[in-house]
Image (cartoon, rainbow, N blue to C red; front, side):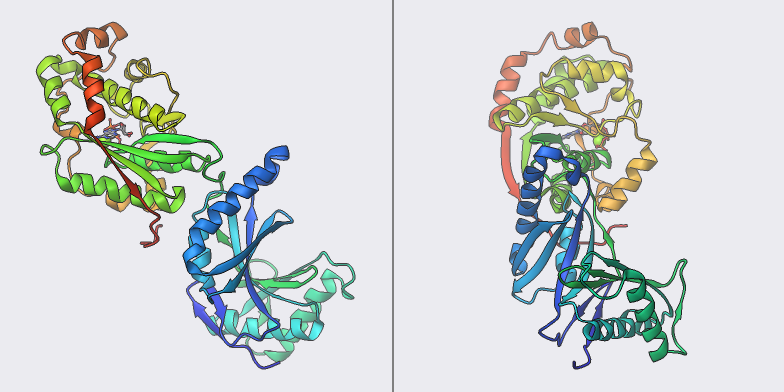
Length: 421
Ligand code: ATP
Ligand code: MG
């Protein structure tokens, strides 16, 4: 067999000049889904559908599920498997991905592949210690797992006696060999975001502001299988076009995880001004939040969403005390999911960094809650306080007219990744 050439491409390597008898593929591990008993088929079908949508512009693929994994081969288009793996790493339901080589069980080919492999992934990167880990599922293969590992290890040490050494604990690289109907060789495991496939838990209406919290809340609920729609209350000109652009950008980042998002903007200025005029100052925030909830619920029901999602966290600000949350909950009939309720702000920030929303969230454009904030909000409003504060408003008319103030835009999958940390 001609020496195989490899190109390093970040963490994933690719064969160029690949001999016909060696295929590249991705081994995709699916975690929690495998526990889903009778529903498993539905979960896997949904995940495969989501995977297809995510990579369809990169080529044609065969995507097959077996042995708690999904096996992805390129059929045409010669896609960069690095790009494919990167896209899939944000698909919920995927626990990890290993780019691998695949070939028919044959000892000579295996030796050749592992030697070439070591040349690239070890020596090519200035590394020297390795370990071989073999799993033999196909018992008709003549050597045991232990024999395969030790023979291959010996071959590598004979070929590169000066440069390489075996290290059982924390080697630079572990070369995995799996012997099934075919042999698979890989060294790398790219972590995914786990969770459940988007679409398995219905639709959620996310109150998305420009802050740090609400995008994280959306990510968390999408990770439990919810399709996201976003609603943003915009108070132009008190909040700028840039503030709206920023929220839209956040929704776009979320599409990496959640897929396409319907983004609804409510022109909230008239309502906000009416509140400022008719609601006691210390109750302004609570009433404003109750109205946002009512409008979000109307839209959620119309769009067949099963829940409202917010980025609230207990005690973070005056409007997030138990009483204030209750005062907003009572005005809606749908469940309100607040996945950050018990998180420390630092944990939320760490998540925002991980998912890539943090840098956008901290851009300095005011949202309406900073422009129209109560100076001394009531931190423990009773329900009676809230009802009384709304007495001078014609709530039904207000909610009714808000319908004409909503504009909707579909935000499509975004793949321009700034690296998230
Ligand atoms: P965030 O960082 O998400 O803005 P926050 O800590 O600033 O949250 P608030 O401003 O009190 O908290 O808002 C609480 C929640 O209400 C937000 O997480 C978001 O879900 C929702 N929200 C606030 N303002 C808006 C808005 N203008 N449009 C849509 N949703 C909003
Ligand atoms: Mg905010």
